[in-house]
Image 1 (cartoon, rainbow, N blue to C red):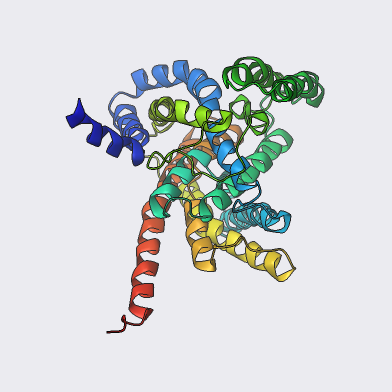
Image 2 (cartoon, rainbow, N blue to C red):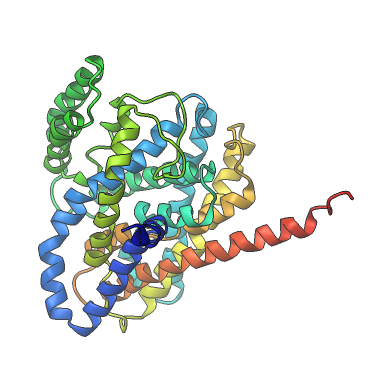
Length: 384
């Protein structure tokens, strides 16, 4: 058992279960598309709408601690910057996609303008953990940017691509008691995280589902109510002692189960026919891989120039890497593609563009290593 501990830790630390699930999905979807389609359709709700609740909860934990006193985003002026950057990271990709479709005469593809607006929280965050060192402030910056991007994306889905009726009244009718239950648990100083999950979280999930919003975000408004020490800790950091407050115990308990969830997340969502490459593929890929970093950098610069504070410890070089990493738009981009196009060539091409956005991960890693080498060359040699 001791011999297996190190390889298991290696797999978990590098999120290889997620990547393994995605690779298996690609092979399965291209070798047995019929059976894969049946499996994915049967498992998608359980994985995407239920199990992924806990991944987004752990992402929310990172944001909660980063915005507390002493965290990387504790200043309101600094926390506003990733929100502005998220808007730029949606606007510029949409403009690139729209301009490219119009310039090449593919007006039939204009309906997919929102596809490259997406940032996949799961994949982008996990790629950022491979690129940046532990507790680097760029990681919560990316998380807050991605959550804001996802929120804006849900608004776009509801306004421009409604799959079913979005009911704000239904959402509020259930969300108010969910938040009330979470507040009551915190007021009673409930230390176990299970009542927050099984009571407040369950009602919150019902609120998102009934309101026509993505129920995977159900624990995001509940997590801030869990008691937490006024210190910042990196998500999934197992290399140093963690405190015993409710929020950190919750994160520690769910660390391994969430990695298993991410395996199935990749398995269910990554199966795309590899031969489906066309104009929509390149429009989506260009919007994500070029438009995302350009929009995030430009809007961050404008926000800082307007007087907002760039988060401490985050350089413009870091923001360039963050922008590239945010170009992974896989899951949400697939949602947009399915909503924008009916089954057919355009939909398959757009899905391939979303798949190609995975190139952002090695690009970000290469860019990070290039910056590291340049800093080493520029540093003066140590005095003898």
